[in-house]
Amino acid sequence: MNRNTLKIAGTMAGIGLGISVYVVWDKKRKDKLASEILKQLTSLIKPFTSGLLSESAFDIHYKEAVLQKVNARVLTIRTDTAAKYADQIHQAWAGWWRGGDDENKVYAVFRKLKDKVQVSQVAKAYQDSFQVNLIDKLHERLDEKEIKKILAITRNLPGYRTHG
Image (cartoon, rainbow, N blue to C red; front, side, top):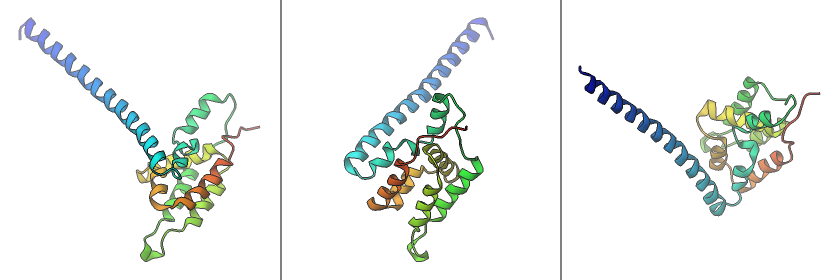
């Protein structure tokens, strides 16, 4: 290969890499924008369920945000404990032929949690274990009254607790 061919090949590879990086970045930007639009539409269409979207405790990144902002040791639950709680929520869902959902089991899990960081940890564990966002699952399985009950439990929780 001559020198010009190598230059052209290198330039084309650089352009291809640049396009690939832009496509990935643009997709993430569009996904974030679509998520925000969906939140706004949901609050207009289903105002009673928009509370779950606005409740920071259900954000799977809430714990990390608190850890970055708080200049003290934040109490958290173990990853396996969060996964156990996520599994308890998942086990509460059942088809009508098996007696239907057991909302009281779901409420019981949220009542065990001591702060919004722990709720966030369970939401993340739910997504990691079942590949579905906990907010989406709650919207799918619960009615307005049941969602309001969960919101009443989580809204009264402190944002976080510190050690000592």
